[in-house]
Length: 278
Figure 1: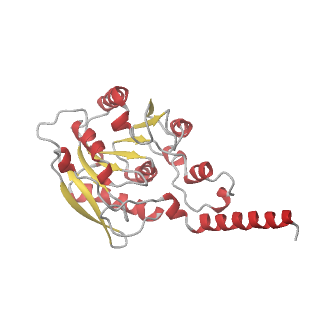
Figure 2: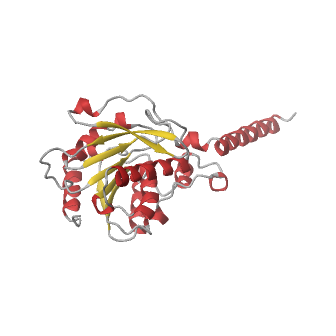
């Protein structure tokens, strides 16, 4: 057989195989949960409670409740924060971020989605949306909080979950860090040689949803983000309904609390100070 034809057949077979894997395993490619918790708030000197939240259908979620520090008077002291992390981590990797937010005066509910950390189940897009909705209900029904007291802070994948939640729950405000425009755009960056838009079933979209969310929004994005480019952050800012601001920083992907420095802290504190108080 002609060696060129053999080569073409092999390349075609590999291409088809990779395409089929992408089509069948999208959840695994996008959701990369970590099970082991590297730390707890105790290591940072923070008081907290382990919380169990039941999501649909019968999935038990693990979360941390960090009560507001006694005498807290920072710019977040009037609010409780729902904290939503990214796709390839868990709460144990985000103790530094929780310490940062708690230091601003917030009480915090920090959630591990299904399949992450100590939460049961397996990650799916619909399942993660259900988990975030269950966490919101816990804050409203168990803690007795009202929407004017509730803010959301989200990173990367968490931004997609926050934008969906906010379209119905209407939080007081949101801080959205390192968000991407949608699953197809991210997949095209990783697999530019695949017909991604024809195969992808995940949405995880933000651009259209943020156009319908009317609460104050602060979009935070690093100009050095190698995973989700700053162009996506700017596009979200352009598409978002007002009021919305963008704060550009430096540092790695979804690491504003660690690497954003004084520019991030000052910009965030100024924005928080301008929010209506409940």
